[in-house]
Image (cartoon, rainbow, N blue to C red; front, side, top):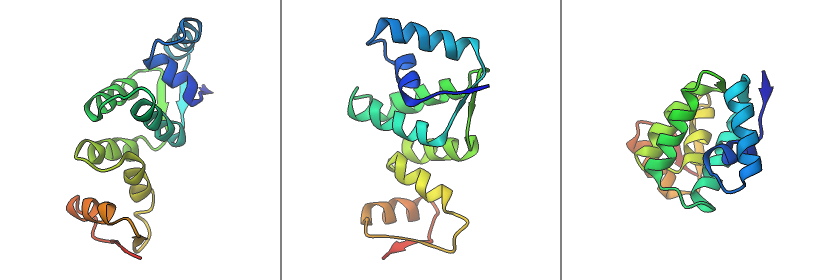
Length: 129
């Protein structure tokens, strides 16, 4: 198994550099790859901010990617739950932060939108700082 960086994930999804896209597909389709949670978080940001993917497209793209037999995603259950929260309207990075910290007695933030979204999703321990 090899670890891959965000740029390989992006090239796999977005055919904007033919040589790199081909190499990314060769590696990901032909090798067991590990994708860290930080790579997933960065890839979501790139797809949304740079390539203007919509929320539904990002969720579908990641679900398909995660289902590939060659792909192992770090903390896959947390990523899956974060994708569900993202699909419901929460910021993806916020969802990952929230879920990675759920072992703590509470989370505090100045982000009122996050507080509202987290509490609506059943996470009442997210509170204003």
